[in-house]
Image (cartoon, rainbow, N blue to C red; front, side, top):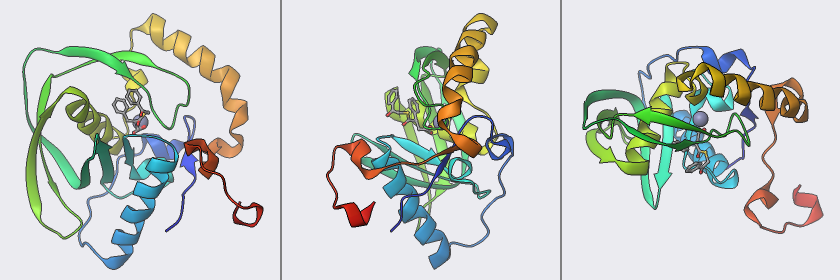
Length: 185
Ligand code: K1U
Ligand code: ZN
């Protein structure tokens, strides 16, 4: 398995709508395994294919041990009055903002074995499903902020983006507090 580079805000791949997956191949399963590894190394709860420079309609999620592979996910329905909570994004490090979203969502997707499933979720899992499906449609959480909060988030990002030459965030294994031998770096 490999840890992949994460693309950050400014990389056009984050704004490109993705292409539906037509076949669940071993190559796709390798990408899924690499995406899980990258998400864990970056201490995220989700990761979408465009965030690692790919164009497949694919995302992975692990919220409190509930693990999902989302191939060609769609929102089937939403429920409840809108709920506001703080979000972050592995592609916009250190920027956070309150986002209002439907409290509950039902999604339909295909898993890594090619089996279609539906899942209904609220709270952080439901929010994470919506955040990842947005990525697959070229949308980012900052798009939902008020003009004032968006401007302030973008001005903070302007000061930080220099840390990511070529819009690439290298995820290092120490980010999750592990110690590795020098030759492994
Ligand atoms: O897709 C991503 O960029 C991953 C993102 C997912 C996400 C976070 C928060 C709400 C919805 C979706 C992250 O994992 S950001 C880091 C994180 O673990 C986190 C941040 C804020 C609240 C909860 C978790
Ligand atoms: Zn994100």
